[in-house]
Amino acid sequence: MEKLIEKKLAERGVSIEKIAEIVYVLQERYVEGLTLMECREAVRAVFKKREVQHAVLTGIALDILAEKNALPSPLLEIIRNDESLYGIDEVLAFAITNVYGSIGLTNFGYLDKTKLGIIGELNNGKNKQVNTFLDDLIAAIAAAASARLAHSIDGNIYLNYLNESD
Ligand code: MG
Image 1: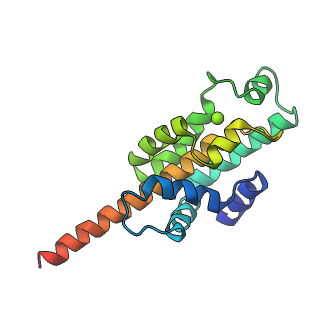
Image 2 (image 1 turned 90 degrees about the horizontal axis):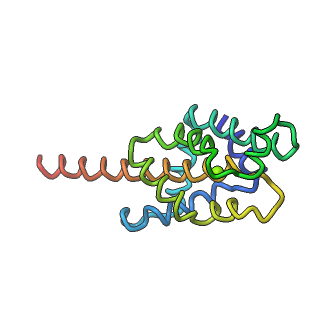
């Protein structure tokens, strides 16, 4: 299933690499010696979660249906125009931010404001693609991957502490 998610995102113009770059920017100052490869691994781990898979499948399907004018009004216009008061794109993304605890939600809020990297490109919508759900899904995946990295580092610090106190 995680391969399918990777493929679906690639079809919409988002590679794991692009998500990993955002994770790197968020975490480099907290994680000493962080590499892009570790960021990619964190993103892949997020893809393994069922809540994430279902949110991605749902959001991308709605973006594509809006593109094809295949949704009923007024939902069609709301999603096509990315109405700022719609808010359900963010609500769907919360299913992803929560998978590694509350740090994910904080990171998501930050990305929603700053629109780092590919998130900004999707939000500007230079191509004709509808990205109403996709930009929030990507922000949420990057936020969750960052939270996972943060927790793994905390875990290491704790293990080091236990070893030192032996
Ligand atoms: Mg959106």
